[in-house]
Length: 144
Image (cartoon, rainbow, N blue to C red; front, side, top):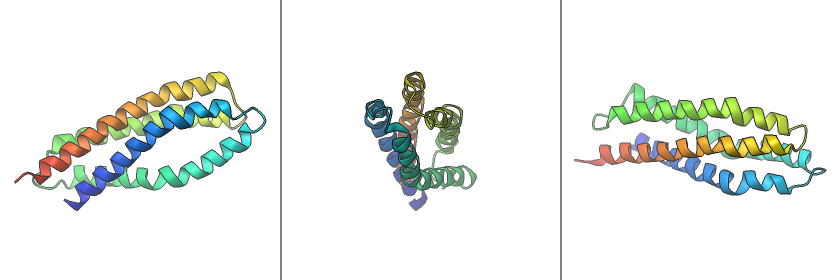
């Protein structure tokens, strides 16, 4: 049960964080100013790693463990679906988000920024779905 709770907490944390990034943080990148943007983006990258890295690693470790050694009372199909969704999140992160951030390291580019915000909706939607699955897993395991 502790693993399911830890999994749900990591997933819900990441979901809240991605919504903040999508609604507040990424749109505000356009307001920084061209001269300040490279330093801002570098600071963003360094600080974000500390906020995102550990919970993402915890989330994937829990998701893998739930598929490999699921608790008896858990709906295994939901754990597998959650891991697939997490794989999609990591794919979108590598395919789009990391690429657009790398381009923005050279300086602000309006088109790249627009694509970063637009493609981040994919991750926002997927993490929201994962939160639902994580809660379903938690609830299914807590039933007598």
